Structure formats: structure tokens, C-alpha cells
Image 1 (cartoon, protein in one colour):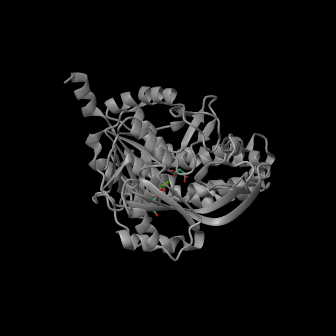
Image 2 (spheres, helix red, strand yellow; image 1 turned 45 degrees about the vertical axis):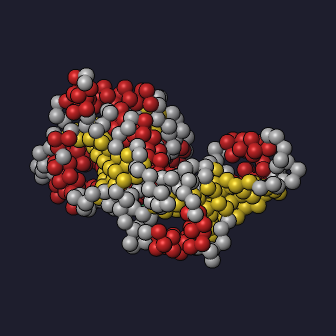
Image 3 (cartoon, rainbow, N blue to C red; image 1 turned 30 degrees about the vertical axis):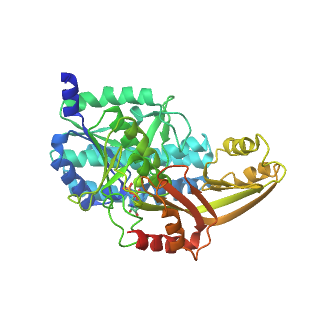
Length: 460
Ligand code: ADP
Ligand code: ASP
Ligand code: MG
């Protein structure tokens, strides 16, 4: 075996991502310290979300400022500044100002100024929004770095905006991989080799022009996966408030169980169809570099969570998990004249393309096509354009349910078992076979919990 390969296998760092609930208060910061210190020999690189509820608060402040009420918007953030201060005063040395209190002072001044600009609309709002919302991760990463340092870990905060380069699609920026990879390696590798523990905010990045951008809600998982991929990490650990990816959302079924191993494909489908525990895009950079992803519980650090691997081992006739996504709108386009004709589907898709609207589930018949959307910002314009093709019906208040398991497409009798379990429920749309690992269908939103519970009882 080639020596350099042995070395790089041996020294690949472990990227550890802590979600918002994992840094919610003093006790949570203590838990993070404990988890990092027990794995210090794995050369940790830390990616952290904003303290829980802070991103929501920043977004609300932005909306308030947009209405012209900048002072009220700024005042609404005070309780959250205090939450940070409470952690700092409990866990950081008392003497003199420290790097965190300085950062908090700047953050307050900058946020006050930014919210004023929002009220005056002195810069494009989408740009200001990302700037405002980025303070959640700017503050949490600085605070965590200082707390770890105070407790004896050789930690240093690194501003993710210097490492993750994106396009300028504010609110949902796309990373530019080659540049990001280069910068991450250039900056972090020497630190790791010197025994330092980098601490970075997730979710935030910067465009080529240097403006702050964000990767979309829940995007810290994505940041962590990008860093793990760039560093060819040994493992990516996603630390959250549940023990791994479970057989369904534990908030719906109290008896949901941890799934020990999931394949990348299964995890991607689950994430896409609403299992919030992993952000959909998380999977991709890890898949590309074959980095194992482990999902663990900060509140039970010794419990074995879920490993996401290239292959999970196919268990025939076996459902692994049930995901769901609410707030789904169905669009039906009926056009006896057009549907069979060449180019019809492509014309329909182009409408969605133009309005940057993603279709989740699609089903066609002789004279109609039905599809589901979860973002309806451009619904009116989409419908107006689609009416050129035929009659368009819009029905809201649906939920997509996605049953996931490797080998599902090939297994006989499973679909009929699923539907006979819920035979009293009316199914609006079904999609099966597009991927080998999922069966997806759409029901009325108020029936979703009942459907999931029934299926969970039958299959787990
Ligand atoms: P974090 O702040 O750590 O990123 P999230 O709130 O984004 O955490 O994700 C964790 C939540 O995902 C859990 O509290 C749980 O309610 C929800 N969830 C939805 N589906 C699943 C599932 N199949 N397995 C585990 N958790 C799930
Ligand atoms: N803080 C961001 C959010 O709440 C990103 C994340 O937590 O992953 O969406
Ligand atoms: Mg999350």
C-alpha cells in the first residue's frame, strides 16, 4: 500500500456539526465541550448552528424592520443577546472583556445599523436579509470557540465566510466547489496539523464579491458536509436532539426507533421528503467523497445513532422509515388537446423553471398531469402561464408521505400492503418506481398523522 495513503487515512479529521438545540443554553454548551473533549484525538473540526430560535428571531426582526420599525426590530433581539451573555458569564473567565463580549458589542452595533438600512431599503433587501440572519452563526461560533478555549481546548473561531464561496443567490446560495475546497484546505489543514480545533458557523458563506450569503434554512448540515468533503474527513458527525434518523418523526410517533444503518440514497430521499434531521443537500458532498455520516444525540452522547453509508444492505420487503412534508399544493392541468402531443411536458416544465419552482411528485394520465409543490411564492404567475395549456386546478392543504427502503421498487406485494393498511384514506397522487428506494403518495394534510401512525404500527 502506498505510504501517503496510509498517512492520509490516518489523519483525516472528524467534522462535528452541532445543531441549534445542541447549543441552546449553558448546559448545552457544557455537553458540547464534553463531546468534543472525549474525541479530541480524532482531530475535530467543529461546525455550529445559531443558538436555537435565534435564526427565527433574526428573520422576524428583518420583517419588522421592513415595515419601517427598525427600533422595534432591534429591541426584539435583546432577549437573544441576553441568552448569549448568560452562557458567556457562566462559562467564560470573569476578568476583563473577552473575544466574545467584544464580538457581541460589534454585532449589536452592526445589526442596529443593518436593520435601519432595511427600514430605509438602502441596499437590496435580499442582500440585507442574509447579512442580518448571519449573526446567529457568527455569534454562536465565536461563543463556542471561547467556551472551548476557556475549558482548555485549543479552539479557534474561523469565519466561514472566508472559506465557503457561493454564487449570489441570497437565501439559498450555491457553493462554488473548487474555490471552497481550496480555501478550506489552505486555511484549516495547517491549523489541524498544529493541533488546533477550528470552530466555524454553519449556514453562512460569502459570494465571490465578498457579500454575506446563506445556504438555506437548515443549511449548517450542508456547510459541515462541504468542509468534511474538502478535508476528506474520516467521518462527519451530525449532533442533534434525537438519536439518529428514526423510523419516523418522533414528534408524530412516540415509539419511533433509531435506524442503525441507512444508505446514502435512502437518507437523501428521507431528507428530501421532510425528515428534518438531515438537510437534503447534506448528502451530496459526503457521497462524492465516500465519507461516512453519523447522526448522534447531544443529549445521549453514548447512544449509538445512525450511520449513513454508501450501501445499507438491502433488506427485501423492508421499510426503513416514513417521512412526510406538509403544506403541499397540488396543481392539475387538464388538456385533451395538448397532452399527447410532442413537447407538452417540456413546455409545462419550462413554466416551473422560469419561476424557480420545484416539483416534488408528478403523475400523468391521458388528458391531465398532476404535480405537487411545496413552495408557492410564484403560484399565481405559474397558474396564469399554465392556463395557456388548458384548465388548471389548484388544491392546497395536502401532505406528501414518503415510504423509504432500499429495494422497495423490486419487492413484491409491498405497495399493496401499504395501501391496504390505509384503505380508508383517499390518496390524491402516487409515485412509485422513479427511485428504487421510495414509494411516495399524497393525502390530505389533516390525515397525515393518522396515516403515518397506522403505517408505523403495521411495519415497525
Ligand atoms: P438541528 O437543530 O440539530 O439541526 P433539526 O430540528 O433540524 O435539528 O432536526 C432534528 C429534528 O428532526 C428532530 O427533533 C425531529 O423532530 C425531526 N425529525 C423529522 N423526521 C425525523 C426522523 N425520521 N428521524 C429523526 N428526527 C426526525
Ligand atoms: N440556523 C440556521 C437555521 O435555523 C441553519 C441551521 O440551523 O442549520 O435554519
Ligand atoms: Mg437541522
